[in-house]
Amino acid sequence: MQKLKTVWLNGTFVTQSDAACRVDSPSLANGMAVLEDVPVFSGATGVFALRVADHVRQFLRSAKIAQMDVPFTADKLQGAVAKTASVGEFSSGNVRMMVLYMSAPEAGCAPEVSVAMFCTPAPSLCDEPISACISSWRAISNNALPPQALLVAMRANAEFALRDARACGFGQAVLLDEAGDVCSCAGAALFTVRDGVLSTPPVSCGVRESVERDTVINFAMDLDIPIVEERITRADLYCADEVFFCDGIAGVLPVSSVDGRTVGMPGKREKLVLSAEPGKPGPITKAVQGRYAKLVACGLEEYSAWVTPIA
Image (cartoon, rainbow, N blue to C red):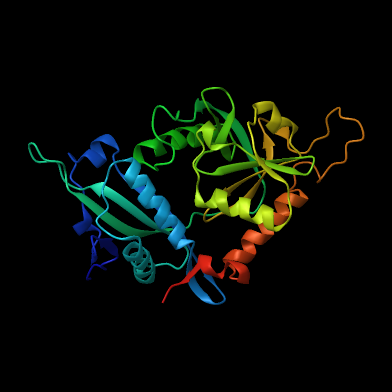
């Protein structure tokens, strides 16, 4: 059986085996590779990619921070994303963009940069609110690795936290920064709601300015939901009326509990009006969740520029 050429590599489609990386390359040995995932969905109007231009912009920014010169324009990369999605063997998932060193450097010379794209399938998703715990692993400091550059080396941090959380029976892990403030969930942006105000940690806490985070902020403004970027403590999570995180493929996912404390459970505040049944998605979570679902169903005309049809 002939192998399908499904990997876009430096402008040409090749097979997976032809896109091999040497074991002594800096990308494999040192984690010096940058990546960005572009969500791809299948809806009533066909297959489409979400916010391609913004993901490419993030990708190029990450590469610049990592001092890896991408030899393609943004327009060329956007076209390559659409082509890669069209030759993929499934209709929902991600197009993963990577800039990496596939070979070892020659003596006295910098290694050659390559750009690769390929499809990854969507993970199985749970429709129910998930439980979360505060991870014993800390988020990577701004002064350790740059959070705005999505380096392969950084992904181990979220993987350690998520594995530990799941081993303890939780569905997601919350990472704190070195000061002990909330940073993010493992691989996803985190949001809380208290007294009708939507909050998310600021970039200064080591939060990545992801496209998904920006999408939620845009939706909150559309819905006239007050939103602030502010320092969030562990106790703030315990007292929150609603907690959710946002992932490109999964969308908006409500959190039912944090460290065994049910989200939305009443405390000692007088005249407290619960915004939702404890442990269930609240009205703000549902509103943002519904808007995200409508977006991926191509039902938001005002955001038609975010949708790229795949032939």
